[in-house]
Every structure is written in C-alpha cells, then in structure tokens.
Image 1 (tube, rainbow, N blue to C red):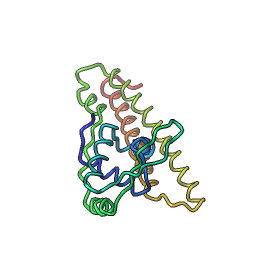
Image 2: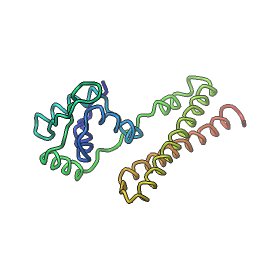
Image 3: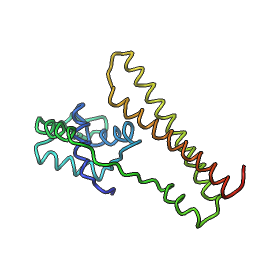
Image 4: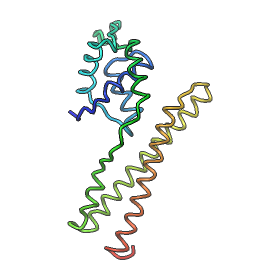
Length: 188
C-alpha cells in the first residue's frame, strides 16, 4: 500500500462533489483523469470512504442491483463534506516533492558506463513522448466538450500542466544525452 499523505480524503471528497460514485468508479476516475500527477490505491480509497462516512463527510447510497447481481455501495458527499473540501481548497498547497528514479540514477552515473545512463534516458524520453501524446488527447477532448458548451476548465488545466511537465522532462533528457555524449562518450 502506498503511503497515505492525508490527502486521500480530499481527493475522494472532490470526486464526490461531482456526483455519486462507487469506490471502483473513483479509482478509475483517478487513473483516467489524474494519474499524471496523483495516484491512489483501493487500499487507500475504501478505508478512507469508511472513515468519511463515519465522520459524516460522506454518505452511503444503496444502488440498485447491477447486471452481476451484486448491489454496489454508492457514496455521496454531505454538506459537511463540501464545507471541508472548500476549506482544504482554500489552503495553500504543500510544497511539491519530485521523486524521479531516473534523476537518482543519473546522479550516480559515475558508477556505471555512460551507455547505461543513455539507455535510461532514451526510455525516459520515449515515456515522456507517450505521456505528451496522452495529454494532447485530453486537451482535444476538452476542446470538443467546449464545443458542446461543457466547461471543464480546471481539468483542462491539469492536462495542460501534464503536457508542460512531460515536455520539460523530455527536453531535459535530450540535453542530458547531449552533455553525456560531449563529456563522456565523444560526439555522436
């Protein structure tokens, strides 16, 4: 299980502010819409949901049986939950902490051959290029929603942030490769 930063309850309340959901649909929404900057596991979501219900910040809404024959618990946000979410949104965000394993490996690059680090950088560039394309798809999707007079400005801004971050990391990796070639390998 990932370390719980204490933010899980706010992520869940934010999702519930958009409408009733099951724990499963919350996990899928996080994976689809927020995975470029945030992750949550089922092991964080379900205990937090139980806690939120216990505190009166969320409520269980029994849903009709689905085609698999199981009733699923849907959750909704309460007014107390909306108030807490609004208070949290008004607070200054925590200072962001980067954790890129590639940066650790590059920083210890003297302990291996330059080709090892260059391969890691090539893989990193490829992953960032894929992520940039994914963010571009989200941005196109949001453009289509605007044409349908649906406003998703804030979600669009997170996708734009993802595009800029992945682009910056790709550019850094390209520059790092250039420097390694010049100083450690010789010109390509």
